[in-house]
Image 1 (cartoon, one colour):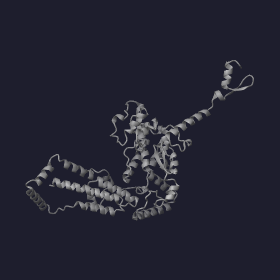
Image 2 (cartoon, rainbow, N blue to C red; image 1 turned 90 degrees about the vertical axis):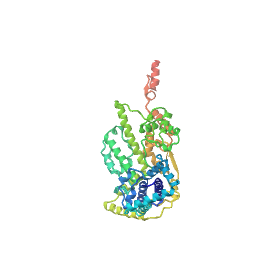
Image 3 (cartoon, one colour; image 1 turned 45 degrees about the vertical axis):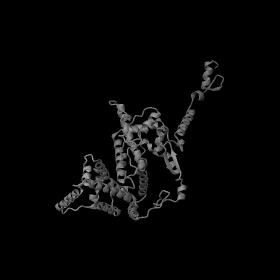
Image 4 (cartoon, one colour; image 1 turned 180 degrees about the horizontal axis):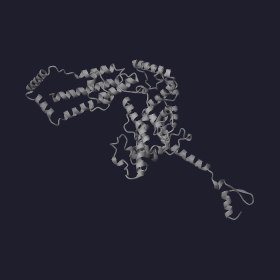
Length: 494
């Protein structure tokens, strides 16, 4: 039987080897998208799976589904075993140390040596594989796995470069009362859910469509190992951009109410109460939120049931909004890829696919790391654009929009484009203001409200006012307005 001290030594060695393997994996050069995704998954395997090396020694990878939800985490399992061993609640470690350091230490040593010899006499054919062999095998497979696909992506996804929303697009077309569009347009507007009328959302087909969309996004992020993981994005408002509840209060009552409703929390109270209630949920999971903050559902009321359905739909829509932010780069790349495919004939598409496969193989063979100290955007050739071009397009200038929840945009082109995107349009809707051309370049909430009030006053003045604009003629042929005519008539002067 293995001693307590030996178990602790083995756990320490295993943790150190795991840490060393993870550090080497993170420092290894990734020259292509395929290598980056494979590296992310190998890191996940190192952290999560306790039985991976049995398959690595056989030069065989487990299926992805078996690795995503393992029964135990190897690193955490070793750490927990070490903590339990050092706490020594049963006193076995202390007893073993006393027996090894007491007056009979030599007799204890020879007794242990005798037990080892007897064990190997009974098990002569058993070979103990050192732990270092497992990790050496892992390193060897990492160096020689540039052509290995650890994740199953469809041909349309291009091993994590693009999105494949064709199935979701078919479900979208089958929704009742929805305008029929093509796939390219769908990639542009699939997250503009706020444009769909509310009366067309309270049905099982629309809910099923949202669930299928979210199911695909979650599966895609799990396969791609997206670094910015999605925890719970039921709220329409990203609280990471705020540093205090006072900043939240500047968004107004309606904006805070929509965020609280999406989380299923109470949305009543004044501006300060709503801001503090929402601020208390920052960096917390649903289980950590105070239960008293949740809204209580009333049973037996038809109106409350409809409200609950609207909340559930809003929560699903909010998750779609969050995923569209996380996958914005892949979404843009997908649109460009679809446009390229649509502009080519069948023969050109086949040639293009062959060229892409060849370019990917060349890209994977490339070992030189691109020198980019200023973190400039990459051009069509995969190299950083010139710095003068970077400044010419104003990408060194950052714009902030308070209406979008203090979101930042790099360059005037992205800044101007965001006024027509869903985030800004949704912020304007929460303020109760139409997103028209009058509000172009308006980014502050206070300025938008003042301008909206001014426009309403001007519109009111332009309305037809009978008392001042209707004309009457008196008995002497003089033309006066309605108000003056009625005053003269009451005084008997006509």
